[in-house]
Length: 232
Image 1 (cartoon, rainbow, N blue to C red):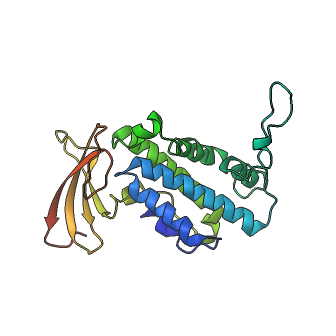
Image 2 (image 1 turned 90 degrees about the vertical axis):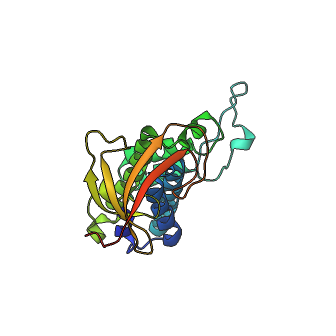
């Protein structure tokens, strides 16, 4: 998977950071909600780590002003840093420069923080949500490449390396014109025990939650045919 390229980074809380990044990538195809939530969590850990590593002053949230008395609202004074101010700090100090990537992750990630209709819709496994999740994970990868890329010489993000959960894609096979599957490909995949499968994935638009081996939330079915020989 793509974020394996960053196993050699040196940053505060590296284990938690990479765990969130890899969880985000694994969840793109099976749980867009979790992919976006993990991307946001990873961005926050990244910002905290960069700020601490470079020993820069953290921008503080501005208090809200009372419209009637034109004075700061007490409950909003001296609040701890939030993701928005962490991003602003990193941009101001030049710790990374891709404001659009950070804003995309924060905007979509905020939708996962509240129990509203927006968050509920993200639980549905469909092409729209998969695309949104994928854009967040790719934006996160872009930030990582900017921050760590010169040190590690990592390649660009490769969509063909995005796994289905813990099923790693070995080879993508273009689908036939009459195949009704999600995306453009069928896949040869392998599980953590090195078992190989031919994999077709069908996504259905549904608010129903159903547990299955590829992940909960929404309905996802896979036609998984085990291969008896190793696929190269």
